[in-house]
Image (cartoon, rainbow, N blue to C red):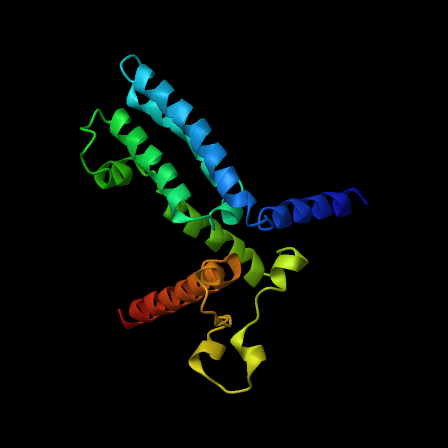
Length: 203
């Protein structure tokens, strides 16, 4: 009985991460930007007194915490709100490495293994799609995805690989939604995984 309650609470918490009103996404992203900007100010003051590993721990425990929680829900906000978070990420990296404010942050991101916000979103979506493919996701999330083998009976490559059906839409809001973006991301992962296996077999 206790295990059922734990599973039910876990599924409700997972489903709440994807269900967020459209009007609440910019507000939540703006609140996260305000909190992260304060932490960046702390990093700018502490960087002269602590080593880099301590600064990276502060980033992982404070900034990354705000960026990853509920990312699959509020990441669908407009780019004007998301660019603020990306700029704050770059500013934190430049402060940690004592770089020029106009220098590129990509080399620092690679060396420190800190992913930008759009790659964090891709990682979170990939983990969620893995749960969908293994039938361990909540029912309201699992019902959003349908495999191509259930759409038609033809033996196509997409159906034989286990790819999911991509819903057609002309709206950018629908194309950037969790269901469409997750389907495209998981189909791409399936293709790359199969391609790497074929290359390994040739060797």
